[in-house]
Length: 111
Image (cartoon, rainbow, N blue to C red; front, side):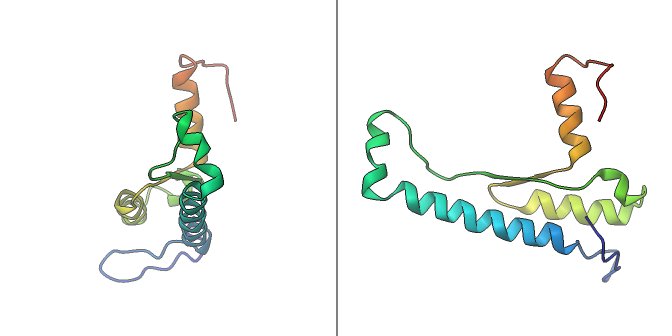
């Protein structure tokens, strides 16, 4: 997630280009989805109570272990992902833990 691994200023770390590029791609995709849902040929779905108001994007990327327990790096990442609107960034290990929880904390699951 932070392949560049560059400390910026005042304890802030630059996020990797994969994260920033992924967020940009999701923003474009959500905007396209919203625009397409408003086109006349897609309005028929509204009659079936299927419609898009503000699509949410999800980016699954990296692993929290990449921060090597560095609080400054983790803080930079957390502040960035919490400040996004309608985009959720989740790491593969976080997604795996969510899946285990949903399945009832199955201990015999592994990545």
